[in-house]
Image (cartoon, rainbow, N blue to C red; front, side, top):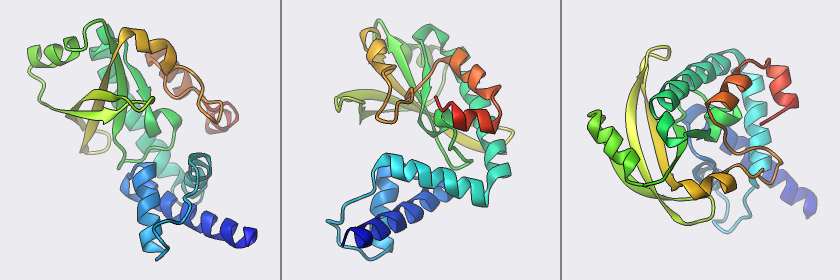
Length: 208
């Protein structure tokens, strides 16, 4: 029975990985879609994030290593551009663009840390940046203000969504605690530049 569960788990991870890479789905949504595509019971235990992360990296390595590397570079360049524009709000990049698994279908996720949570929104208004306000769950499960904007990525020849999650300044320390895999879940502009200087092999050996 354990072998069967492992087989199903791996199959779900493989299907979900394809959805993450080819369609830009977030992990949770990809897992749910994989269950439906495989015709499994909705109560089937889902693969954990480390398992799916490994499957995503394997999919990229097999099917699209060169194109994915170029896509990732382009998205990181866009992220650095906006981190510079929003430097006053201590931006930290997270998600697939930070961890190195992003493709042209991926969105950019960035945390801002402000003395006044409204200041980032006011700054976007002052610079006439169009955005969509909303609310998402933070890393502790608490509601967090999210500002979503659309920006042009000339290297990819398309528009990219940038999601800005606005936190209190006091949340910054907790934001840098390693995740369950021992990785830093996000990094500032300096950390991102250092990451971009690494070769693919170095990145795999020293994942952030």
